[in-house]
Length: 340
Ligand code: ST9
Ligand code: ZN
Ligand code: ZN
Image (cartoon, rainbow, N blue to C red):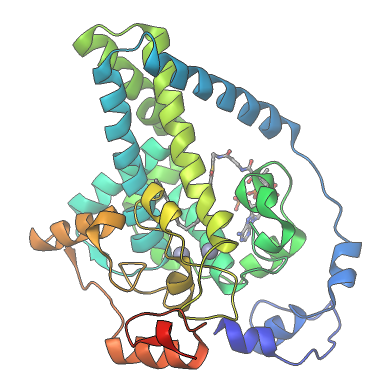
């Protein structure tokens, strides 16, 4: 429970204490005064990433320009389909299925989602889920890989341009990932990532327009880079914008907020105040309306054909209690908007 952790008394404990096993100690260490932590932390830029991301964004912008000038319509449509497929690999796959275990999936769906996930190239699922579990457990502290209290830029892309804060590694050691390593599909994805990723994320997406509708290499390649970069930014917006801008109907004591623009771009992942309050809900939102939550529509469809099962949600009564106890008063369902 984030609130209790945040409000825990600031008992000073020696930094050398063994952290991994003892929940209580971990919580206490987390509240060592800010200055003491930053003292030992020296920001180390990773120039390889800075240069690669700069080139990637330049090529992506050129791809966007080509979409409006020389690329065929079909190539742009294909780019959109790839964005949806790769997006599902992150939202329905890495996030809701694997990081949070909010539903279960039979192997054909796990295989499909692993393929989609590799198309999105956000690193292996097991590593993505490790960072994400740390993010939820130590949200907005130095142990949070994309700690949004360090500003929009850091939470968005800055965290991928420098070495991680030592606290991320330290606290991350206590995160259990055995459930993910039990799945051979995920083990293989990680083992052969450097082989699968270039083929699935770049080679196949570029070859299909060239082969089937005679697109030029430059158009096919750059439009795909735009698609990839767009999906990355949509994902990063959840860490930046949705941790800064929006209402807090479920818990006003945390930073994650309800952000409809991010929800649309990120296929249902912008309802972030709800998600951080009830992270086990497969809808990552209270209502999961399909119009702003395509991922929920996808999981519901998979449940209909029997590939997804044991979908977890939160009982209405529990949500209501929480809204009344910690919400900011903006929740409409119980006439809260009219209060005062
Ligand atoms: C990308 C990821 O973009 C984006 C993730 C966003 C997450 C969003 C979540 C929001 C909610 C969901 C919404 C979805 C919406 C989707 C919408 C779609 C339309 N615990 O990492 P290293 C240890 S990726 C424990 O190298 P450095 C560990 O021992 C883009 N331990 O740290 C590790 O070794 P190993 C493409 C940890 O050296 C070792 O440290 N990819 C943890 O500080 C080294 O790990 C890239 O561009 C932990 N959490 O480097 C690559 N973390 O792994 C970018 C680390 O062997 N990354 N350890 O076990 C990098 O280059 C580096 O990670 C770095 C940090 C330079 C950033
Ligand atoms: Zn978050
Ligand atoms: Zn999450």
